[in-house]
Every structure is written in C-alpha cells, then in structure tokens.
Length: 60
Image (tube, one colour):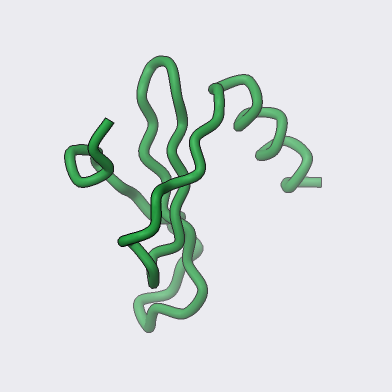
C-alpha cells in the first residue's frame, strides 16, 4: 500500500510544537506506524492484534 494514500493521525498528547511524534494509519488488516519527522521512510506495518498488545503494554 502506498503510504501517501493512508490517513495518518497523531496522538492527541502530541504538542503543536512538533517534537518526537509517531503517526499511525489504521486499516482493517494492518496498522502502519511512522516517524512524523521522516515520512519518506517506509512505515512499520503490524497486524491489529500486535498493535493492540503494544498499546496496552505502553499504557501500563
């Protein structure tokens, strides 16, 4: 999938000044993750269950 065709979102916790942000694009079968400062690199792509487990662990 072309990363440019995805709808990328940042966390509501990301400040307006930029900084170190991660953007996520969610599709039914995959979750794409990229660095907002280096959008030319290919995104990391994981299955939804893997992403859910990561988010759950990160929220601890």
